[in-house]
Image (cartoon, rainbow, N blue to C red; front, side, top):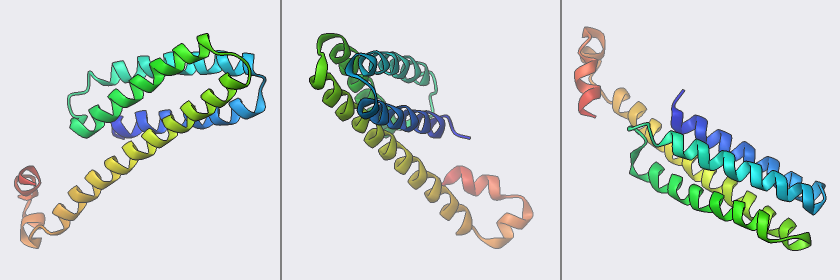
Amino acid sequence: MSPRFITNIALALAGGFLVVASQAFRPGLTGWLAFAIGIGVVVVVGAAQLDRSRGSLQRALDAMTAALAVWTIVASVVFTGTTLTWLSLGEALGFVAVALAGLTAHELSSERIVHAVQMMPAEARESGRSDQFSAAA
């Protein structure tokens, strides 16, 4: 599996959990969960930058994710009560939206590669020269 796919799925799951938690738990607990998820997201996005094959679009999404995670950490410490509940909900929905954008971008890039291989001449696929054509695509 691609590291891009794994980090985007993890972000979507964390955001989805925080969406539910923001509506199910009291604001104090929601704040601590948002704080923990924000720190976790910053760590994962920072570690993901070691992967050189992430591409410029995914790096831009990573930057948006990191900015949103930092805001989540700040908001979870500064705000209380219903303000914290609604901010946590919005931040969690933001995490889910960025993750879905990353998953869509990953799928589109994978689909482009599959179509490039399918359009390759049949004799090249059978003769073992497919490496030359896939490297060019």
